[in-house]
Length: 246
Image (cartoon, rainbow, N blue to C red):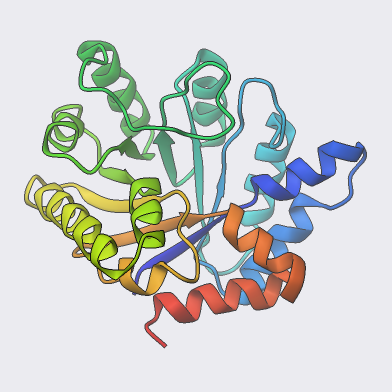
């Protein structure tokens, strides 16, 4: 079964819009874990507009209290404060994502022109701490091979292009799916695990979940938005059912 890692950033966004502690990120994590998710994701940005460093420490401490293992994935750009935070928290996984100035959300995977030796050293340092490293890439041959050369454990395929294709109808969706399937197959052949994320939802996930070698999807915006109408527990369970093929 494909694992679901729930990104709780949007809970923090709502909290920060008013100030204070409501809604609680930790309460959201508790609901998600109780509903059966195997993973939680946070993306602390430099401006702390949603998840803060305190949230990261608090979520890590909470996840350690559960009897069953719940993976913790910290994603973000490899700025010094983020890497220092990851080194201290030691999550299950660190997903390194490029950031463009002024962006609202991620817009593309890593460029193959990214300085290689610096990235290799960064990946090696995280792996030496026992942290699984995933690199956010576009579903193309060159960036997948680049990720393997960097020494990553996994790639996270950037799925917004798939989501936009899905909106155009079945033919476009199948054509986009084929592109991702080739990228996933290549990643697997290079020894990389396959994650995916960005704009996956209950409509397009039934097709995407069939992707060869898919290990994990990270979903936040759509899942939390759906929860506004049906509740977080039900929203999580509906996503888990789709991933289980039910």
